[in-house]
Length: 349
View 1 (cartoon, one colour):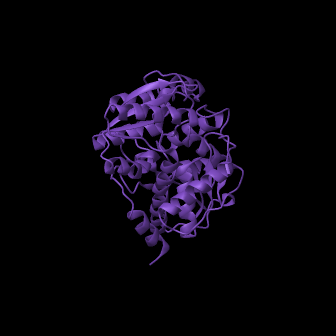
View 2 (cartoon, rainbow, N blue to C red):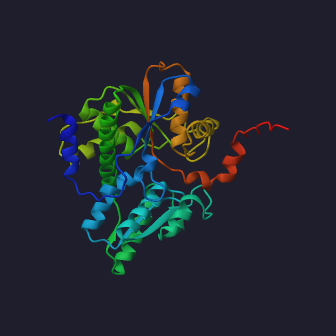
View 3 (cartoon, one colour):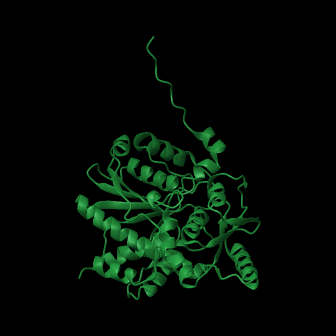
């Protein structure tokens, strides 16, 4: 039995609910690759996981929502930023499973106009509160207090503990790397690198599977935000907690995780010129949309690495698209001002 099958069997023993359209496609980007004059670029379409415009959190929720179902929860209480992809996909997961959803959405630096992910939260039937607590320990404490208030009213509440959530969510991206490995074998290609926007569970799960499957190509985790902690150590801790859940002996050291914070720009969710170029270039060559908070910043990193001559034209690069399309509409005015106009074609007279 090979390591691929072994890992899949270990993952298969965990509680899980079916939410996503899997496996997601792995597609070649011929026109995008040609426009860069570099390697052959492939895209793993995790924007196509289903459930209210898809994304990586739908994979996560297959494992997380299984806990809620096992506990007979009638309400999930969760929270993040006001335009959170996570909360939107959690609301969609709850809708599919017939569980009520209440969200604590941090105001942060964003407005709370009902647009983008917040509009989808409404459509999906989630109740919510806009709160002043910042994403992190403050918001987690507010979530815990709110969950307890609902319990006191007799609700069967499921509210994720972030330390548990991270490891279980990571396992879903170990599963994703199994998919990618099978898909690249079917295409008979050997990637030179894989790029993804992650500073948490998604990247940790890939790192764990890379270790177990003894994959040689590097995984570049392009950060969407600078956290006030050691990001390599954090991903290492999450990966190793996931290994414990799978009852596997492998350990991922911090130095085995490639973290790149060079493309964050002025901060989380703030578009950069480079990410706007990435959004337009992929859209105008392949008809695929990136978002300004996550995927476009990762693609900006990939583009920069290609243009710096890091790869030859014969090599293959994998880009994992983690979703986030609704963010395009939340900041439509600011984004529109940064777009490069398209010239009107000349008409015959």
